[in-house]
Length: 205
Image (cartoon, rainbow, N blue to C red):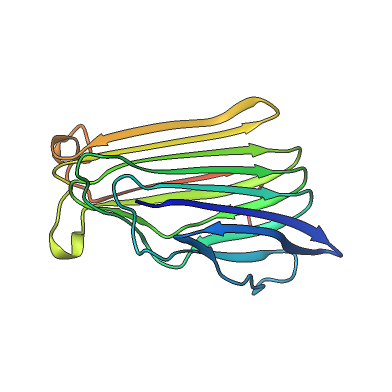
């Protein structure tokens, strides 16, 4: 079982966004940032060195974008949550985005293996005129090998707040088996996804 932690703090200096604080414990690591879109958007890749999440794991991430900083955060590969012996695996993510800062949260998909028991909680606190673009893509079972999510549990809670007011609250729960196969559930679809943007008005272009 892993008790992994990751803390990142971004700051804006001379019109460039930099990471000025990194703290990581196994199995979480972060690659060196890079800037394919210019110095004001810091691209960051999070690594899970163990290859996947197992029952009993508790992984915590705390990410803070200070005023006027901008970042894009993704993962090096798809996340994997392995079959459980009954214990729950958890991932807890807290994100604070200060005034006039922006974050694009775009991890690769998470694959929930048959029999996995997994809970994820993500909370975002926005400052004045800050923005958030985030997605969650989840695959139930290893589709390429014909595996279906016939047993297990998946919980996902999203909270996005600004100035103490809730802007987006989304709590999802699926049981393996009937909720995946049923017409009132996913009707045998193997994937679901959510994309949320909160920020300044977007033009037609």
